[in-house]
Image 1 (cartoon, rainbow, N blue to C red):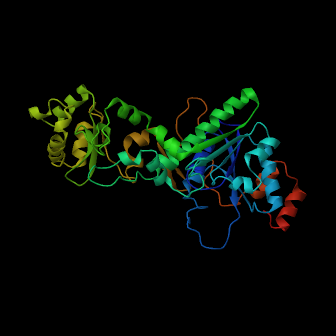
Image 2 (image 1 turned 120 degrees about the vertical axis):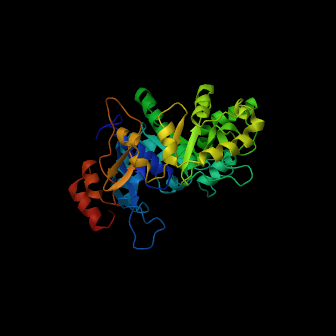
Image 3 (image 1 turned 90 degrees about the horizontal axis):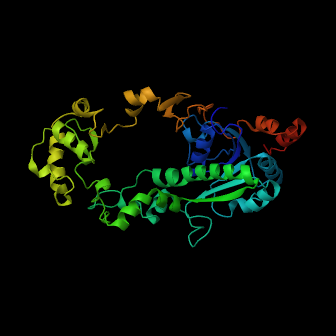
Length: 382
């Protein structure tokens, strides 16, 4: 193990979306994260990628598979939790309590435990027990409404804003904050990470703009929402796209120079009344050349320019290659751990594990006697 979290032990109750993403982040940073998986079944699964080398978010962790409805399996989980610095879970409120693994039980046994929970709606409130997905949570936070064109419904931004930005990252941040606090107090606590609240927090600047009067609420009309001609994406002659973000006057002046624009209509770039007209005009200019021609002209300048790369192109771009932004694990290209550290550099130590792949190994390492492990195997507990 390497990375700034080396020496930290985390138990991950395997779920979907934000919890494994948080666990991946913690493992990337050097924490020893043990996955408690459900025991594999022979039936069909809606998530066939799980347990394969393509399950990128499962990288860097060992897996122990248990049927937590069995008392002995629950006791095994508690044995690990007793020794852990943190636990993370992403089930609906009450699930862990019904398994006998709720925070009251775990913190009574291990008072310094940091108990991280991530849900969509939060642990309480009128919607706490309702089902939902990323899209619903960012809809509730006000963020979904702002994404897309004004003459069309809001556009789902993949599941980046709720599951990963507003959920997994907030959980990982909360866990590390509580771990730091516990070093001084010797006391653990419960983190309640809700994707509604996390995605709302990601929109802090936008809410500030709205209060100031600089965000109209008309989807697609604000500067950062695609309303401005100088902060937008444009189709090129070959059907590929470029992005332009020339907000500051000096960057905007360079954009006009490199596009050979002398039309006085472009002079006041903050005149919102002209943005629709200017978008049409500059769209026609970008459509005259293929994307590479625009890259040759603008990439690396202060225009604030980048080609819109697809997921095949991004790993091979010269800048991403130089920075090693992407790595290959078990033949699967994937994002490298981030951010960078000058001294305790993180790294991915292993690819995804199949459910239960390391059950006996984990139990040995966490102090379970060999004869006990043999008995658990005979009883099909592990």
